[in-house]
Image 1 (cartoon, rainbow, N blue to C red):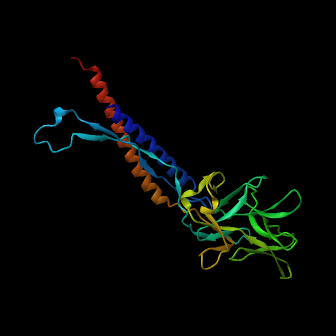
Image 2 (cartoon, rainbow, N blue to C red):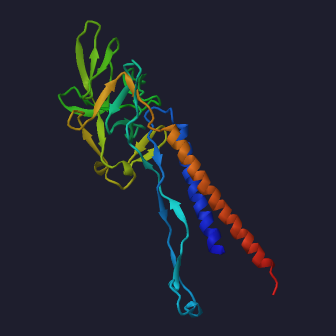
Image 3 (cartoon, helix red, strand yellow):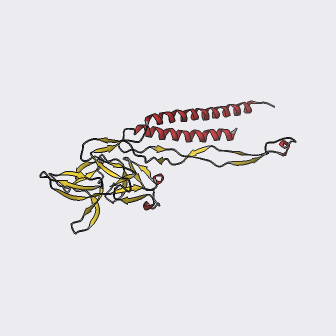
Amino acid sequence: MNSSMINAMVSINALQRKIDTIADNVANVNTVGYKRKEANFEDLLHNAKQQPDVFQQPGRLSPAGYQIGWGTRMMSPSINIAQGALKETGLSTDIAIEGSGLFEVEIDGAGTRAFTRNGAFQLTVRPNGDTILATAEGYPVIARVPDGRGNMVEGPIVVPRGTNMRVDADGTVSAVSSDGSAAVLGSIKVLQVLRSSALMPTADNLFAVPAGMNSDDVLAQIVPDRENGIALVQGSIEASNVDLADETAELMSVQRAYQMAARALSSSDTMMGLANTMRA
């Protein structure tokens, strides 16, 4: 009876985490660039037991040995990198990615990088007066920009005042003046996802590569083109890839499994209570 209670309790804990994952998906159904989290489960260790010899009777077909399982546990949720629907906004600072690509942003002054599909960018003025392309939280969008000495380095896109920003499908960013002339400012850095299961979701709808893992095994820097099937779309944003109907159906299934596990726990408690009150 103890094993049945432990099994039910462990399963309830795993199912509760699954419900939390579904709740997180539903809460972000309208979040730009949000990627659905998927729960993965694995069996816990089993104990091998052997029945006493008295059970080994003539004609018995079932084996005397058996295993006791201890339920399942939920592993870290994986990320479904499937593309969401593109919605046209007409804003020049909104940029969506077609294909399995990610933008790279700088999240602190120490140069720490993170990645996102949320292309609802804005123009932010820095303390030095430069107007740069950044996320709604103020994280600069990383690009390949000229350093003034003929070299290309990584840094933010600086948009001159009085110009309009134009972004081509390959990520090239240009400043268009009122007379129609254009000057190239750089190219937005785009990374292709090689192993979506290795991406770790963090705050502000960002992703990171776990510490100790080689980022080159997870992401690869590319130039969007027809061969890799990736392109940037200016004036559009990517909607969440969460399907509310699918999440609701899955929630109902998990709730029923939760109820069964809770009933098993209650039944085990009842049987233990009866055994404790029995008299010789």
